[in-house]
Image 1 (cartoon, rainbow, N blue to C red):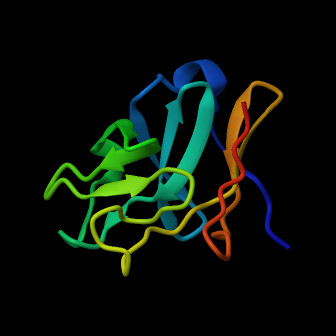
Image 2 (tube, helix red, strand yellow):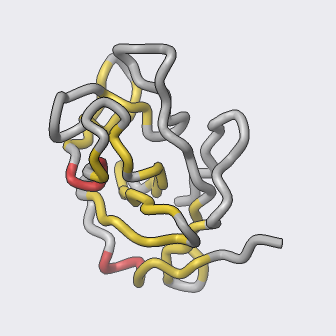
Length: 118
């Protein structure tokens, strides 16, 4: 059974900036945007590089997104879906705030439905 992995203290996670953490065998990009926390795989499938935690976050057509820092594709933070190419998506990981710490589950979600916690 999977266990939650502690990433950092809640106050160490800055708004609109990503961090990268090793969770199990996965590099995971963790973001806080608009009082929500998201966790996606850090691997950018277009550039084949682990760089998503360095991407820019924002709102695009009503979707909270992170833009790849290499080729600028936008990925929905809640679903992992690429907005420019519907055949590509990032894995989404359950993430929560628990007793003042940010925690991520090492098993990606099936169906890419994010568990968002304020």
